[in-house]
Length: 409
Image 1 (cartoon, rainbow, N blue to C red):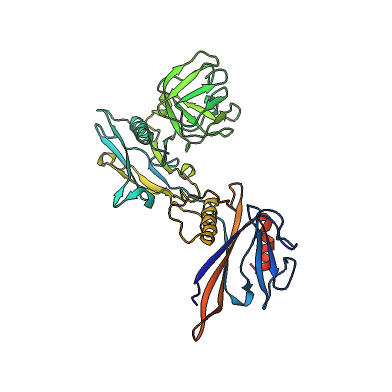
Image 2: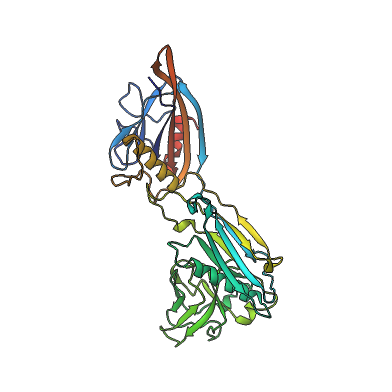
């Protein structure tokens, strides 16, 4: 006989442990000791043998093999950590830095994607942004031109792998915020208004002004993106329309007047010598395709290169990307792998038509529990073969206390 060295059983527990004969609600779990008819939520002790009963998302009760508590080799409990997207900046990043203006400078930004799914052979995927400065270079034109160029370069992609933000250091002035609700559509270059586009004392934005957007119900800061006004249709009524230099990357919604969600920065203020400019690049992990068995977890990370005419402009990695710990995508993908592993020996290009995931996008996981057991019950010629089994339990808050009690975490 040959013993399989590593087998993993994953359970996503969304409630307190069952104390009935078996869980009766989908995604509920129970611990049943050998010889008992009911599940038990008390602490395991030396000599106990137990199995995990689980009603899966398809409302079918499944169970693990029998574990022996004395055979526990190791256990760990890790708090769930969210995915962290990469953030890199060129020039002003919302705190400090600035674009260096070089007369007649040739400004080229190169974004090189480094994740394995973006490489074919040894060929990396690159995206570019470029701007050629005039005889009298200005940092606001350089920054805006590069933001526009990068946005245009990525426009035809299936999804925008990097979100480009244009930043300006001129501080928020609530008195210069739009005096009405602004309707924002992510991916559109146009802003529309409930009644009109007035701000301050009956002023209206003009071509060359800038608009800074926060979020629906949240005022912007100097770290929020700004957009240059390139065209206006202002009739002081519901047909008021403002066209921006590039599509909006902010979330769609109604940016309300009362919380100063949309602010106007006058051209003279934005383009003053003391105002700093920069571009912030953020990995767009939120919009990456994800489908169980088809598109896996894809953390976006990239390099940023600039041409020599940037001079001493700061190019920085502001936030290091991290894949996280126990996120929904990780749990769902592992659940797919393990469930299908029990069903078929080979899964090359298998589409999960009949798969029901035990992980849900509505879950808020709190801990990942790992327990590793040794088993030497497999007999071989002249002895036994050791095998190892891993029990993994992912919990939400309602299940944490019970699981901690039973397994001694």
